[in-house]
Length: 624
Image 1 (cartoon, one colour):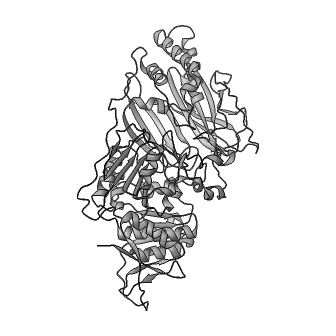
Image 2 (tube, rainbow, N blue to C red):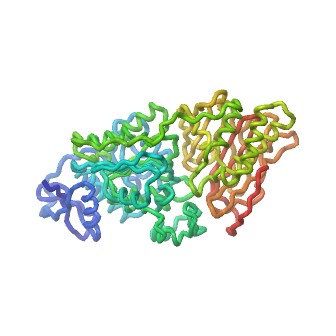
């Protein structure tokens, strides 16, 4: 039987309409019919013109549930959404006035309010049902979003089932059948785009994303650059907007789309998209305004029934959303499925929470689920145990040596690869091996510390080198505030499969990235002002130490490193000014210390307050 969505073309695209039975009718303004037809293609229904009631006194059903408008600008859109979905609604003017997350169904807003603290509160574990969010950048976008998300929730998906899993950073065994597709790192751009745009029941994407773009392997990136992106007037702009250079593809921004290197988020079609990534929704306290990011484009897209995604980096796995996907194919409501996912991962201590951009009442398939749910994700090609370093060095030096010896292929445009300075890496490994063999030899420790700090400071990050040796990982805490910004942070303790090595503590912030990375029992923290003043806030270092500070921009701006200054007593100075002003673009400043044989790092992301001149300099300074 054909499923029909009742619609009517009217001058007021936000009018609250009913048919002669008192059931809601979707009001259509210019362009709305085509939009709802796209939603219908994904969910298996068709918009059909419907006769309207001649009087407003037709009986309607008793409201069931609550929709909250945050800010008066969203009131009329919230009222329409509540009407279409059979709920009541209420207006609040401030985030502090929001009801508890178990007391309302959907938050509708035009406010720039999606902070990590708010998302932490809305998607706390142990809820029976997670609330949804409808957020848009303009009133017209919010009106259209209300129509699309309400249609998806009220109609729900038909019995057709098609699962698509895109995991471009994992070497998966490829899989393709009538009801399931799984693509790994070997997928071509053509395969990726075809799978993403074909219309899935459930689409999962597991990859790297900084909130601005998504890693789709060597052939493509998920990128929102288009006329809307170029016309955006928000003040906090990404580096590529300033330089007109794409640091991911290493080509001119103006030629990016024509070169066929991007997949646009507006092209993705699915009833539910599960975007398990570092940053899916960019919190308001970020170096770059969320208006330039992927999240806002995905959450506004009418081709998605709902978006389920992250707002902070965590230590995760491509199998982490298996429960969520299974529940959705069983016909469980989206809000309940997200809540059960978040509760599970709180109990597992992974730190992975997901938020829901859409209506929690949405069902991807009818209640009771699919008669033949698609098969789950295939396994990786290799199922080897965590890597173990060679046995010659011991303890912390074994970790250093192994980390510098392993293959290093970070994402283009982020952290430099060790391959970029192979000679220095070889020197650091040799110095580490020499110290491990003869720790009491004159100057062996100093030589090792200087060489290792030089390499790690040039790279700007250590954690992704040692995480490959992880044997266990558990979240220790969710801190309500980062030491450098207003975001909350998640703190992990990671046990490594390296005998004699202390577990490492890793703190992650949605804005600053990896703020602390050090062995358990050690500590280091820093603060950097936009004017380039660096303060060492907390560090317990032995008398034998080496240190450096790294200033890391996106390309084409160069990475700079300099030795950490020494005070009169031989300790690291507690405050100093960087040798060059910070440019007025996003930048990460990190501190690298080696004390004894332990490596400690701290970092902060910010926007510099330097002069407006953005001349590019291609030379680099070494830390050592």
